[in-house]
Image (tube, rainbow, N blue to C red; front, side):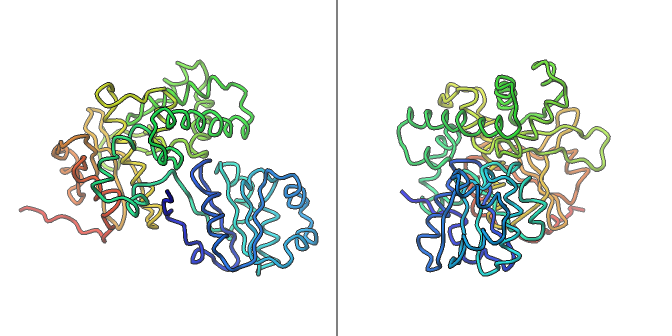
Length: 389
């Protein structure tokens, strides 16, 4: 079954004088998307991979004449796994600046590797499209709202990697997730930053997985792992840059007792999170349903915002006396508070929130109305709620 992706039509993404960079974790469909686009285009193209020795030899040479001869007669050059080509950004810059008739597509499976090699050389010369495991927004083109609701439990437990979605066998889903986690995501981290302590990295990820939805203390993590805070921070930064986790910082403006200085971390995919802690049990055998739901909602919102071209500032809100709101969007001059509740709960907003930020909105999303948040809702201009006098 083919699932349409948000970036399927790359034709309107091209901009003169810019390379097109597709960035995201392995096995989410970047290569498939590029190949499908190339197969339908009438332009002359070549698809190459950074895993190929000859490709690396040509582009690492930074020999303009050699590169120009290599691209002779082409309209498009597509380079998969471009981060494997040393200093690939300088070669792409040569093409963009001197062979403007050739369009450039490059994919990378670890953002910190690709960004480090293309960021500075391609400053002002690239358009980056971030991809994720398949979003419910994308799935809504294939399934009805009713069908998506029926699959919700699977999404929360097994995630939405393409290979996971197309198999109905639970054992196969688990094996795929274990392979992706062990053979790809962790391998990227260990190789890219030359980390020697595989055990420490895995244990840190497991600890973050067990704290989804909670503020994280680097000091506490460091004590438990017997490493210093700076090492914890460096590893966590690598996890973020390699599309394993996403951080939300605390929102604070007016109150002394508003929590600051800590972040909450969410996993890009629920299935990867559950694979790290080896827990694929059904909900009646779990005590982390609320965390799974919050992780799912936060990341689906991020996917939706990215694919629709929205870029609000994102936070969470919490006070020292445990008043909290799961997610805050700051956009269009307004504040939007979102609370995520599994089941049908509809709690009232914290009085401290409404009293301090009277212009802010507050909405609870549960299993009845969540589709409005991750698929259907638009981003209208901010209008403050009426004030009851």
